[in-house]
Image (cartoon, rainbow, N blue to C red; front, side, top):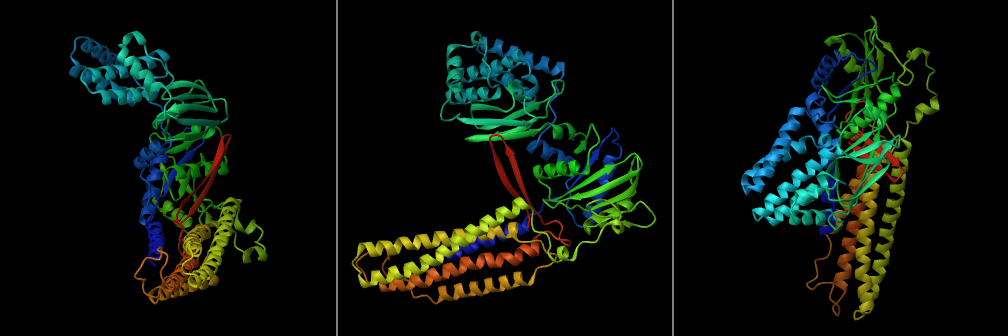
Amino acid sequence: MRLFLAIAALWLLGVSNALAQSEDWLVLPTADDERTSWMEPTVSEVSRELRRQGVGVWSSGQAVMIFEQRGSAPPSTVTPSIIEAWEARSRAAVRQLALGEYSRALAELEAAQALSSAALEELNREPERARTVLDTCLYTVRALLETGDDPGAKAQARDCVGMVPNTEPTRYMHPPTVADLYSDAARPGPENKSALIVESEPSGCLLRINGVRMGPTPFELKNLYPGEYRAQVECDPELRGRVHPVEVTSGRTAVFVVDRFERALRTKPLLHLRYAEPSTAGQRVRDARELGRVLPAAAVVLASSSSTGMLELRLVSGARKDTAFARIGSSPDGPDPANVTRAVATLLSGQCRDLTGAEPIALDCATGQPAAAVAPEPEAEREHPPRPPRGQFIAGLTLASAGTASLLTGYGLLAVRGAAGDDWIADSGSLDAHSKWLNLGTGLIVTGSAGAAMLVTAMPLALPYKAKTPWWAWLSGGLGLGLTAGAIAVAVTADPKPAESCSVNNLNPEPCVNRRRQTDLAIMLGVTAAPLLTMPLVYLFRKNEKRIKADLSPGIHVHRSGGTLTIRGLY
């Protein structure tokens, strides 16, 4: 009974957490030319109108900050004066170490380390300067050893290994104790067995880790300590790559970089896409989804301005192939607020319209042509709403099949355990009969709970899209409520708990067997109710024409060393 209540509580907690989530939308300008004066006013007006309609929106500054932390940031720029100050602090620290003024040396070294960390990928680009960064880091190791902080020195040596990978220090600049400590830290051990694999499209681009040149992609860097590293992929030797902060954990961490997307991406002065060549709507939509995935954003409003004074706002949300959009007139300094209000209303209604003329023109969302010129949808297709995307549907169908099989196995074990209980009652002294009865109880709980969990997960993935909650989903919810009530009733009316533990042999087994028959049935009824109750909830909270903020976005990323399947969003 307690196990059933725990499972039910966890399931209800998961549902309440899902309902409590709220991901903001992102307004994303895109351009095929150098005109940018319209971007900030457009983002400001569209964001203001969306908020007025009750939609949460990422602010420009917050979107840039989060994306640079989770996605990529422009490479650091270091002025000659900063480099001179950094080198001066390093030299001063060496002099103070030689004079035995270790506290002053540590202060200088901490300031130098702060400068190194802020612009590591730039300082490490040149091999000689990278060696200086490493030497400065090892001076800190020496100062810590001289002040008796051996654990701190050991930890600092590990930091030095990660800060400037695949680089050797200037050996004659460091005493043997420091050199030995660094050699021990750099030697592969159980603590630095992690690996970072970086691939790119196209392949063969130069990879830099923390600014240090590694080699062409795909590249695997082994024997790393867990921690944050900065990866840059540079397909054009004349251009510095964007910096990807990568959190390396135990095992293998993979990063995949698309050069075309990197070249279009901008985070200054606001998050936007600027293409060197004319881009297609499909290309911009794919890039918008990638940006939305990184932040994350529940939806992205793509803003594209043409030289003819037309602004298109396109709503991109999750895995749906169809996107709502609106075309309005605009000036070089941004759109009129009244036009933005009409465009946002069009997006929120899921429609596609041209609002540049005196009267709005309905457009076909797939072709962008006037709706009157589009052939009507066949009756057969209107009767059957589209099912989820293929990859999502297959994943949901697989989970549903496995969950159904597991749940049916649980009911089979329920019958088998009842027979095993009868055998134990008939021969109360049999250790084999007693052990079999106990073990079947564990299997029943595991298979029943696992089956219910898989079915609950499969529901939002496999169920077809419907504008309204269908009658059979309500019927499913009613059956789920009935089973829940039955489970509670069976559990409440179950025989009292035996005075002795049922794990002990040589006792009267009948009270144990009778009580467990009832509680096992309550558990199975409860776990069966969970997926039945989930079905109407999916339709209540999944994305549709009226609830456009709720969404579920599967993602599949395939590369040479493997692939990943991710599912995120709200339903």
